[in-house]
Image 1 (cartoon, rainbow, N blue to C red):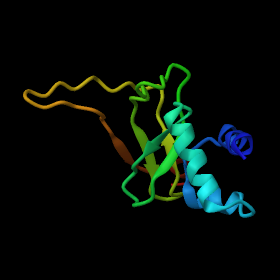
Image 2 (image 1 turned 60 degrees about the horizontal axis):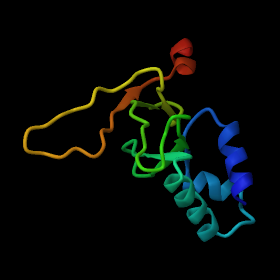
Image 3 (image 1 turned 90 degrees about the vertical axis):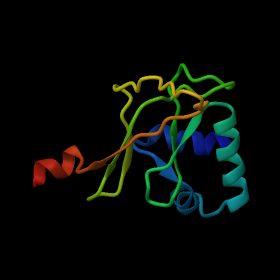
Image 4 (image 1 turned 180 degrees about the vertical axis):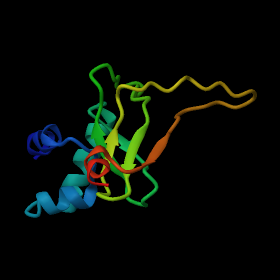
Length: 121
């Protein structure tokens, strides 16, 4: 199952939610898919994305991501027309230092209309 899920991720151009995986692999148990996602996240194969929709999405990590600490520090774009979330890997986020605070992660979600719908508009 892990190989099938990984192949599915490799075929995608956008982030994937658990319900999308469950739909694709309807013949698999939900628990198996959940464990697969958690294993992939632990092994730095995928990272979690909270795009503000209330449904956690997952996308493949960059090749330099490490098991000890995810290094996927980039913004994500959520298209309000097609409802797809995409990693914006070509933009790096600065490391944010806050006085008297310890920062673990930084998340930036950019919302708007993707290039496909922008051409139509």
